[in-house]
Image (cartoon, rainbow, N blue to C red; front, side, top):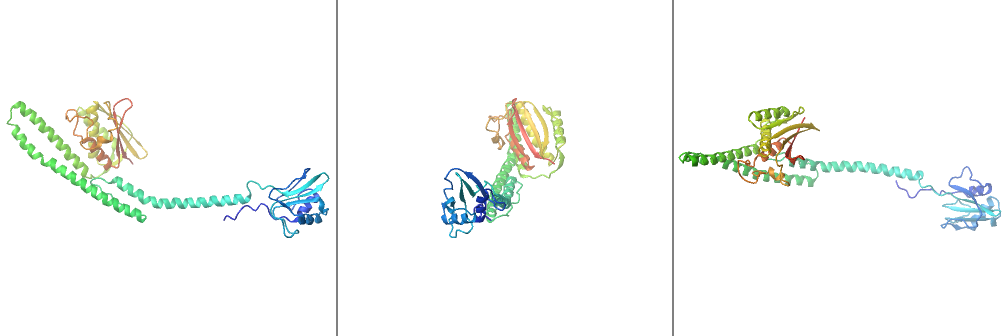
Length: 392
């Protein structure tokens, strides 16, 4: 406990002061005083005052004439024979000079300072540990809430934790209600989109029947348009199915899956190169993952003529790179390309671009596996897609 300034100037008996003046050295049982010799007649500290009665009492103990004594004291005494409190400077004339006995200058650090400093450091350490513990108790429910919010997606509603202080519980209830409203609206719109895509198949079939009665040149053009519309509707249905379903995950070798996919695409005439990497075991749905990497390879070949796949593993994450030699991704639009029906190629020509659902499906599958997808450009030119998935 803090108890004021360090007690450096301890009470000094006047007998010890007298002994020091008589012998010219510090007595063995005296602490905090020093003996010096000076030739000047001026001495003493600014805060010290004279006390003739005290001088006479010390002179009587030497013994020495009182007119040869001159002392200055921080606290002039009521009883001249009592101990001296505070600092003092007492001189005894010795020839042309003086023998001075005074309190020694206090050191910068004393044991009192070290004890108080150690106590403060221990108190600070204890308070720091307690503050860290309290902060962890307060922040843990918030971190759990943030983690649950990042896992929310169509077809997967994570449980919102409701622990922690009252304010955090109220926040969790608000987040849960907001999640329910957003997911209900998203599921409703996705269901509506799927229903529209499905119902459009029937009138398209009737149109295809009537198209057969057109002249050959017109029939071929109309049939090509109908095939394109069917392909677009099929892509929409696959997107809504992927976004709403939650496949069963199993342990699989990601490297073997990519090698098999590369062989199948190469056999189909797709220009794709696969660089072999380490063995990587992940939890995932092989069908969905094949669709993910197929979409990326098709995009790379469509815009960059050729695709290259490689993978690595570090710190519990598998990282797959899909690179091409095309123009790369538009600056500032990489994130926008993940939105449904957004294409990197500005026109809506099916010969030069897809439906704009490929990357949306890729992100949906990656996030369903607890991963992420990043779009960057290579320094040597071309695009690079980085897929990160949790690995064992």
